Length: 66
Figure 1 (spheres, rainbow, N blue to C red):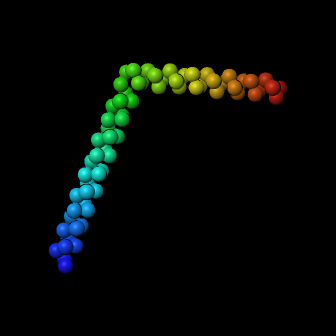
Figure 2 (tube, rainbow, N blue to C red):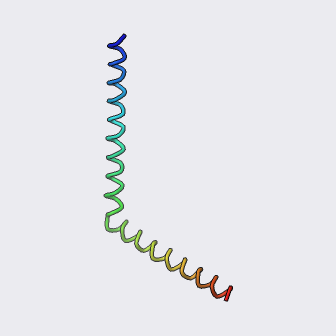
């Protein structure tokens, strides 16, 4: 009985280790992709547009309340 529990625990630990390793590989690939020049440029461009849009909306709200 003790050997079965030990074997099951090792199997579960092995599955967990493989799952964690796979997750870390996915995270690493996503980080590399995010730093790729076309993706990075697109993210920066979208950030600038989003910031400009927020600023314009804030100015419009301020103008309406003033």
